[in-house]
Structures are given as structure tokens and as C-alpha cells.
Image (cartoon, rainbow, N blue to C red; front, side):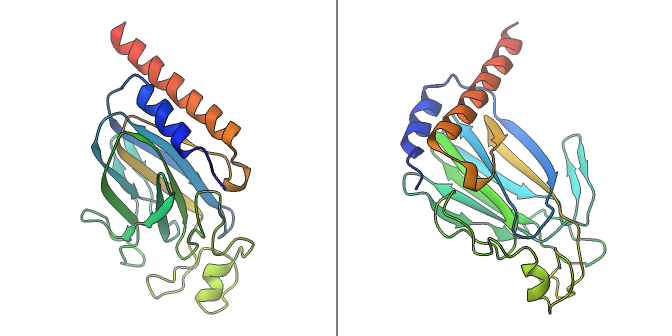
Length: 215
């Protein structure tokens, strides 16, 4: 059980604020049951937007993302209970995939208080069973999306579009209006010490950015 939520909130609120913006992360899963988690902080009340672009592609700032990735879901864990709030498919400005002609990228937008938050990105239907380190519905089931699509071989089958076509393991996530954001280790490897070290690195990065602005 994670016990560091209040610890993270205290440290984040004590940190010097930095200008909020959009941070883009990209990567590739090898199997359906992989999950990537992120830690982000905000120093003042803000409406934070979380949006994926790996399915249909798109351009975020100077970053161009190609289409073809799997159908994703996001889960934001809200302190102090770490209850998971799931994203909606297809945001108001989400693109349509040129191959499937479906809109399946994940979108989440919510007003949040100052503090530190964890968001998880996973293949659709691999929903969390509890907090960030509480496991996910399809842990140990690396080809579940293709089973859901009718026992097709491989991984990353596109159930959401109704086509069942195989997709790639690529993902892309944009976090908008956060002061800082970093990728976390695998959920099963998280611990109080590990989160503390991750947050220390995140805060050091924020201080570097502030020093560059001052200099």
C-alpha cells in the first residue's frame, strides 16, 4: 500500500514554483499488460489536461507524433485516498486515426489543488485495481486485447474501433499546465524511498529551470 501521498504533497507545496507548460512523453510497450506511470506537480490551483496522441497521432508544440498506436486509457490517482479517475475516449480536439477512422485517444481534464499527482497510462481495459501500486486488471495477461478481439494472435488489437486490427505498442502523453513531470519506474517497483528520490529529481529539475530564467 502506498503511504507517501501526504509526503509528496508537503514536499511539492514547499517547492519553489516554476512556469507551467506542456510536457510530452513518448515510448513503446512490448506487451498489452505493460503500464507506464508519471508523477507531476502543480504549485497553484490549475486545470490540468492529460491527453494521449499515440493512437491517431498529432502535433503538440514542436513534437509530431505518428498514428498507429494502441487504444489507451489514463487513470489519475487523487490523494489522499489514491482513488483512480479514468479518462474519457476522444477529447474535444482529438484526431481520428487515418486507418481505422476511429477516435480512441484518451483525454482527461480536471481542476486540481496544488500538490503531486500520479497518472498511469495503459492499454484500454487494463484498469487499476487500487492505488498506483495496487495492480491492474490484466497483469500477467500480455495478449488480452487480441483475446478480446476474438483470439487474434499477437498484442495491441484494436477492439475499440470494432476492427480488431493489430496496432503498434507506441504511446504518447501530453501533460498540460503542470509545473514539472517525470516518468516513474514500473508500478511494482515503486516504494516510499523510490518516490522520494523521483520527486527530489523532479524538484531539482524545476530549480534548474528557474535558475536559467533568472540568469
